[in-house]
Length: 454
Image (cartoon, rainbow, N blue to C red; front, side, top):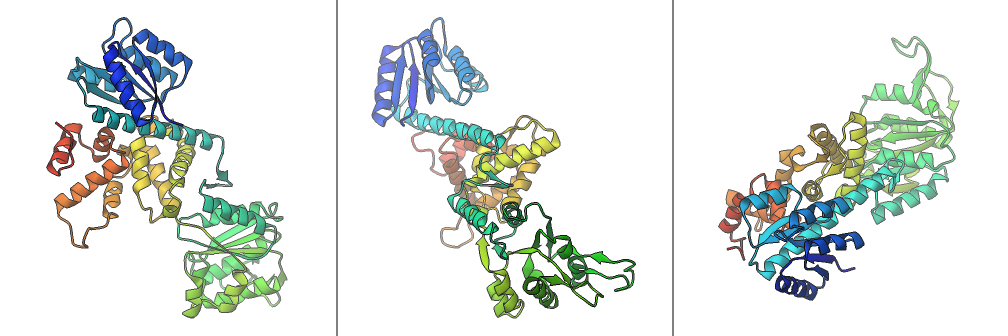
């Protein structure tokens, strides 16, 4: 649907010109030629944007602004006046106005401001919708948060294979949520009432890992004063999750093969094996085929483990999930810390969307947890995100010819990048850059990016 815009001005000619230009652009435009008429219109239907004159008799633009934001906190309001002063602009912006322009204005300037304001309003509504979705648990699947089509297909496949009781190998980069997917499979299997037992094979030395997995008999080694079952036995009737299976030593791979093939486990120091009924789910960030070819992983074990293979995409491959995940983690950590932080500023969301996330979902959660801890109010802003985040976003930009750029080239590159991700909104861009609008304008002029500016 086309955006619906309300124009309020007590000068009929100004109303007519604005309405004509915006309708020609494709917007639905409703006009009122008095402040009181504008208030009436606000009570009858919702609007995506309000353009209102500041100086009007009886009901002025500030009154319109106040009522509009009371009706819909996400609606952007642009104030127009022939009596523009710096004080009026500051007052309007502090009161919540999106922008402030003075008559006489250029129609191309108005069109640009309108487009940016509508984009901001859409972002605010999306953020509010995301908060509601997180609050009501929508798009959350046993801790896996997604609306990405490929992820949803993966979860559907995981539900289907969960009932088969066969071994599953989950692949994916570190931080993508492999253990969460393993728990999801367990929760949807016939073993859901049994134990889910997990261990990271790369976190222990070989002897300790063997002891943790297989257990030991009394006297099996110095200090073994009693018999202790291992995690495999503890998971009897349930699921055993072996994370980073590619880190398991070859000697232990032989023992694990026996567990998978024969469904029995032999404790350290024991003479006989113990029968176990356990489903094995493994995960790795490595290419196990390459590990087999290099002789670092047993081929027979690989084929036993990779009966069903599931691959988790990196966060950069599911970017539409970044805002949803950010709000999910915001809600999670705000509750845990007892903080009343319930929203993320649109420029902060834009910055989060532009980052590459080598640490994947885990890294995003860490960023949001840090932001919640540092937030001074109810909104997480760019100020609560690491300064290095913006720098790393810039480093991800490709160099034009592969040469090392000058400082000026890098600054220009970054300003272009921030403007693009701010949808041309210079106020948002200045906030992200940590400078005021005047300083931004000077840099735009310096780099020839201030076309159309007087």
